[in-house]
Length: 201
View 1 (cartoon, rainbow, N blue to C red):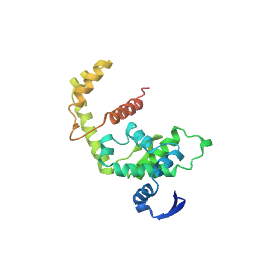
View 2: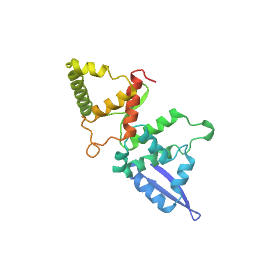
View 3: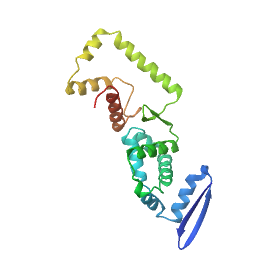
View 4: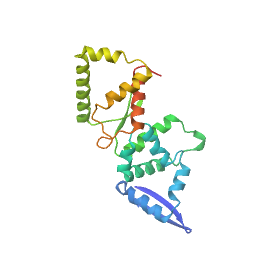
């Protein structure tokens, strides 16, 4: 149980709310005190919008995913900001602190995360992981069984060829701008992660 006190016309309104009614709590507090969200953001080391945009830029969620369920993500962001609103200004707030804030935000939104090789990672369910492994293994086997493909791939070694080769390859995947959207920010984050795992800096 959480207690919230909201000043309004010199009257303190006490709201006692269980966790499954947090959404109603924020809606009521916004009606009672229109400045509630702004004051909440001022007290925390980051704003709700900053938290959401950081999650999108880092590839944890896509813009399309956010647009499809804004209410859930907005409530998760507000809850996270609320939990960090008592952060002391003298403590500072670094990138590692923001990572833990992102983790809390994502899990508040129902997205499971964990640290893999010291990197915050969005986790998939077991069935999805198995399907990903199968799909990737099929691609690897097809490449291994085609000497011509291996030779062609090995000759792509300039930035211009990379861009054109990526376009050719990506156009053959199951992604589709309308049916299976993948945001550019997500793709950038994934390419960065893949290159870093291969030793690129």
